[in-house]
Length: 71
Image 1 (cartoon, rainbow, N blue to C red):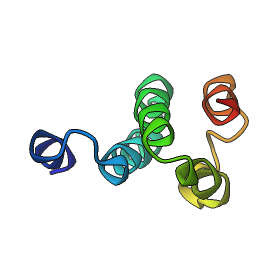
Image 2: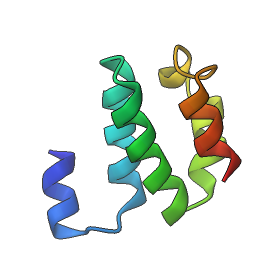
Image 3: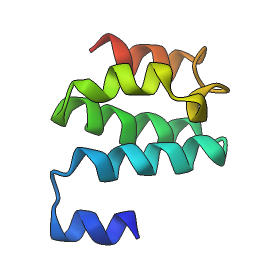
Image 4: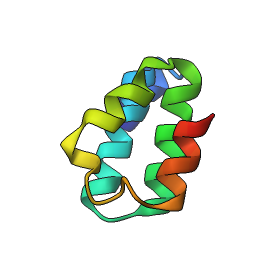
């Protein structure tokens, strides 16, 4: 569904953020990082949102998560 949204609006930060949430739920750190990085690049507010989002609780201390938010 979110991939479909990106075909229609390839620069939609919310779609990338949602894909990062899905990846975090699946414990896929690499894919979570890629999608969250893109969301934050498109709209910086998603960095703070990710810090506060319980969906990322298990990923919050990973190197990938920390590096994405440092950008």
